Image (tube, rainbow, N blue to C red):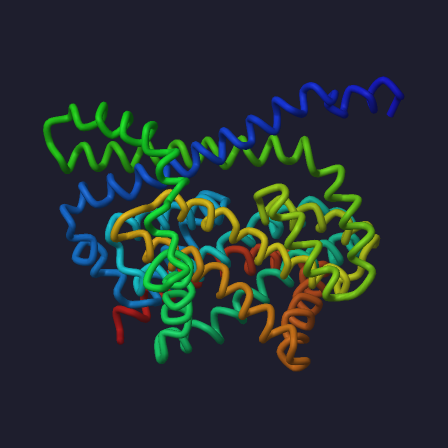
Length: 384
């Protein structure tokens, strides 16, 4: 790369101010979008959200919805923000919890697909595919452990409710009467709602509000990711290279921090796959970084939850906290117990060795986890 290319690749200081303002404007737009989805979902369902989602009262179906939606959209941030909006519109938290778990599995398809770009070189592909699928194995293991706990004890629903009440209601720490974010976004949200309500049918206007909100979420998350990558990826790579080799705790922290910076776990985990393929980092070094990305991606739903005020403020914050607590508990439990910690590493290593010898193993894994597993879960719910 020439010196001219290097200079042109780095934004001048003056343009950075505009880019940071763009990031703030897009985050503002994201928060507005969640408010629109909450109102729209409530209007479209006529306050009967629970009946509308009665088919998802089985937690396995909720899990499938999360897996498939995130695998198709390729963004857990978008899906969890949408779920926050739906809860604000009346979707019960108990139904939404498995959806959040499913979004964790669905988002891993991106870096698994990225690893396929190394298929022509056997050893390189083995390392890259192992780095990608260790994320898959970890998230599958987390669901196997925490979904039964949620079904039996409501672990995430109850713990997130406790924290949500501390943050936004039901205690002396409540900020529910001073929702600054909601006050700042209400002019834009009210203006869009007023224009959409020109549609005579309330159900139709609710559907339009949901679609407008979803389109704004897509737009804001896509472009905030692009801007942050321009602003932060160079620094993120520097942090990553410095931190990953220093131990598991530093790796988890760097994965969390970088994902908060670039607002996309798919981006941060996909950055690691080529580095793993090249042999820059070992699978054991990359593993904690992937887990940190799981925690870092939860910031988007928390931002989205700040859009909600009124009686649904606590449930909206609660489902955002479910995402945080689920990923935190998963990392804390699985990584702290040696016999659990080794399972994703062994699974990824074994699968990558098979796939490097016979490429159809990779295809079976991708279709099995992201297509056949959801179909199997739906089939099982019809039998039991």
